[in-house]
Image (tube, rainbow over all chains, first blue to last red; front, side, top):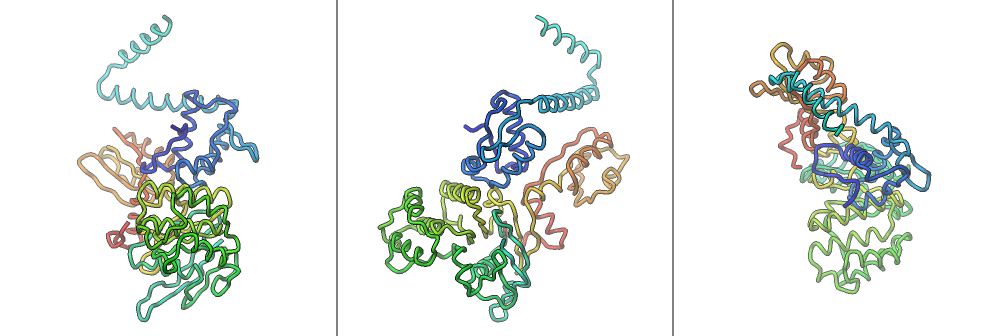
Length: 126
Length: 300
């Protein structure tokens, strides 16, 4: 099993899948700082997908500061992954906001949501 | 780079290609999609330099290919109907190819024969259809061409072999900048390996584009937007390709950047909405409909 997985039948563009895959691997600790990403050649051969698409995804990851590249050696995970963690947190907040709005719209009392948050905080302290 | 300039070709009074223009960048994998009789094979034959167009020219890195051995040495054409000398073995065909292509590599040939699991000393006439196809692919790759023109190359290969050939092509693209042009009637078959696609229909290129760019600029929005504002008002300034309503659920295909469409949808405070990317096939259908063609006439 590879760290980077792609579903060619999916509606989501392949290069977006690669970007998401690398980000997930960083967040879950599968890839850590200064670890090498598979080379474009290896990944293209393994997944039988277009190498230019992989290169494009790696360039975008580099632009976002998630990876850095060393000419002739390949792409590596940045030592500073705070950016991606921050991005992940803001994404979570966004999802949470949408979910809470839906909950309130469906008739859940906001007080109950607040109680839930307090309960989670209590559980964490223990 | 391959330049296709004003190519026209007729067989008697049947017009096969009408003033085709395209440019294919080196190192890219170009998919040529079209139904049966759309002119794919004719275009590839002209691109290989073996058939003379009625008008126009094909150039490789600026040099015309027709009657030009120097350029033809860099181009391998994998015909849909493979040709092998009568009674020949794969080894004998390799000998023939090595005399035609100076870049032919015996080492690479031996490697590929092993990878494909074929017997070089066996007569090709005893091969199955799929094995003949494999033999033509490996002979072509052993020539180390800069350009590889593939006519329905994945047809007749089993799924495992198809995937294997795609891997080989992808590796050759990275390693030495091979430029494959893959003609197929099946979009789904080649959309994973190609980065550019051109759609050939009735002898003309209907449109061509980079796949990722195509996918990035058109989206389906599905949501419950209420009655206050119409879709046209919510997404003012965007091109709305199509719009359907089922009960309270609206589905609209809209051109534009994903983030911008998402923001516009959010601003309308919908009860629910989501943005779904289109499949390449759906994009093609909408592109064709916008150009006034009925997609049902084109097989994917």
